[in-house]
Image (cartoon, rainbow, N blue to C red; front, side, top):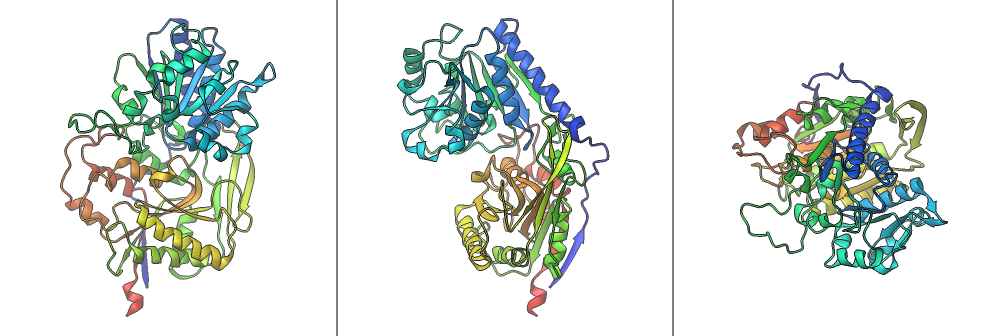
Amino acid sequence: MTITFSPPAAASIDDAIHHDAAAGGNIEAAGRAIATLSAVLSGDADYDKILLRAAAGAGKSYALVRMVEAALNHPNCTRVGVTAFANKQVFPLAGELGKKLGKRLDAPRVCLFVAANRLPEVPQDVLDHVSVATSTGGIPQTCEVVLGTSHKMGAWGEGQRFLDHLGPAANGDVPYDVLFVDEAWQLPLHRYAMVEGLAPLSVGVGDVGQLPPIDPGQNPWRGDPGYNPYRAWPTAYEDDDRTFAVDLPAVWRPTASQLPLWRAFYSDWDRLDCVAAPGDRTVELPALAGAAGAIWASVATGTPTLLEVDGLADPEAADVDPPLLGVIEDLLTPLLENEFTVVRRRYDGVGGPQDEVRISSAAPSGDPLIVVLATRNQAVDDATALVERLTDKYGLPDGVLLASTVDSWQGQTNAITVAVHPLSGADHLDEFNSAFGRLAVTCTRATHGLLMVARAGLDDLLSEASARPGTPLGEPGTRSLPRQTHQRILATFSRATLNVAVSAE
């Protein structure tokens, strides 16, 4: 078995700023959005949409909580709605808002509006800080914040039921003065259309690289060749005269070594920095030998690592590849049979460095330590079987090793990502495997290390693939050729080639 490495071809991050200097950019940008929100509520500005655009891991929820608090402190705002596509986004946000806003007249100011069959899924830590209602009539009339998914808030007739039960907000016409949309770039336009009328002003906060979900429900625009019903709703309004948009210029999630990768995804932004400085995030490895030792040593530097594997048996399909998953299992085995530790620097609310936190694989806590990501459900079924084998073999505690589809892992965070590249084994670029958002989610979940694994041949695929004209929906900025986007991103990886056929000879 032979392995060769080459360093990243992308530029260095010598110009990057970190810690509070980086976080200050986000505070300033959020402040501009809050000032605009206040001006609209005061009648001094004529916007009906405010967009706070962010890269993955930019602290969007923190900014959204600040904006909700600022809105409620304005005399012309008595009630706000908060929505998102999925309960996994709404539940933690409800908890954060409940803790931040507290109670008034001994009653929570925040109400979680949730379907009755999803109530058992609400964490106790959320229930402790909010009121909960499964029907409109159960929402306390004293609540100032009502949160629910777009499906729940935008159900047929719900706007009128809000009015009948709660009455109009300070605007005198509709039930909410402001509608906040979390993870806005993951909400399809046809779903936003169902909630837009709940307030005269919408505030969208989110990652512009997210994948809009494919909603299996019927919608009236399906079949119209000039309309994409799955497009993220803000893309229809970003250039509108009545939309105010601002970017958050710093990210909290990645290591400093990952910043070139983040910048490759958001290359048209004026600036992008990261709060973590060199050395703030490390991985302490056990003694490892051979190819596994070399690969994990590369991942532990924080620099994204791409491992291309040659000499494998044929896959079942381009994105269903048991032989490639076998290589991943072989790499994970020596790491998991020994203890490893992730170390991270903590920061205060404005990015100032504080103490270190050490989390061992023997006693994990918080985010999962290792997550294996693939694109198709069948591939993740195989990855889940891999996870179960290794978990049983080494008696791993919960939180050490998980598997998921890329799409399902949106909005989640983990220490180390091991992912099958969406283009692995492909012979052309199609809308699914070359989607900017799918690759962005794959690459931006990890706080400590990223290992991307693929069959050999990515460079040949990208150099020979036919150009796809136009700008793919959901991509920020001008992306006329997806293959060039992929090439720019691959240039930020430390690359290794592993020939498994050599060991069989």
